[in-house]
Length: 424
Image 1: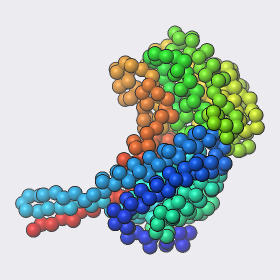
Image 2: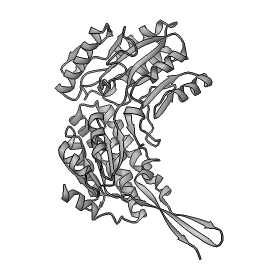
Image 3: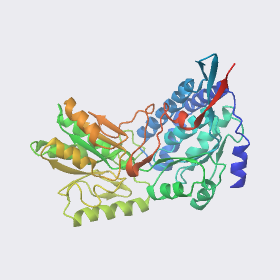
Image 4: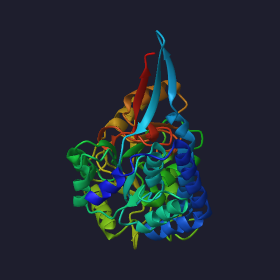
């Protein structure tokens, strides 16, 4: 661990800002040339459907290039002060970054940590998910081929104990972690000096208030709940529908049943396999828990190897244990009827998580009411909560973590202001 920190610490004198920007552009160019190889590596490693892997690579390109474009925010500013004084406002790197990244978006979520660190001038120790090592190795190879200085990004296969040791080193400046709440909070408690950025998952609700085309929205929700086997922190998990519109149930059941599932190498597949037998066992236990509590499977609930058919469940209270307080990380959602929009907003907020939420409505008063009442990082209007724009601040409230990522945000988080004040 000493060697990793020492290597990073030796690079705290950053490249000039123009060279950092050029490095990111070269990295993006190489990734684009190897985009199909990277997409296939993602699918091979994680079982993500190939069409979704290609989409992740495209998003990764946006992340790198968007970060390069956002580097204008690091340019020094000059202020004239009275009487006759002037100040230069600079942003300087915080120092070494430890980036811990998950399997479900092994490229793009890593790039949201690595690209801003490079732009800010911070050396990085990168611990990728052990379930997707090939993705990290290819990404780093492309970075090194872009003439990245040796040691600027160190790829490290670390155990949880080794990560815990690093975060207790006072030379570490930033911990950027995406993963489970238990591990993330433990690391946060252990940090000695590092600034901590945590993304710890969610339990996203979608409220259907005013919808023009029920069938179209039902299909959007099915994709939002089940894409990549629901292994997405902002996948749809709770669906709130007006009790006065019983047609929603039929439309949602049809959409879930028709969602292409199975072989991740088939171009049409949206819902592929879960990451492993441990995930299958956990999800099966959750489904049994729902059954015991009175949940009814409207569709789905069967396994073909590691592929769970898209599953829709009703008959459970919105605040049933395992429904409102658990991240399913599976291709399933629960359906709940509401009487008035105020109760739907209230029930959506009743979760320890606070990452994203969706609301379909044209009523501006309802939108503003929901925005004020639901404590999430992002409220998505007229789309599913799994919608994300990589340029915008992304992160959660409550048990979903703290800090924000996004090409317009993370640069500032990895830097700090430094002032040169001239009095004459």
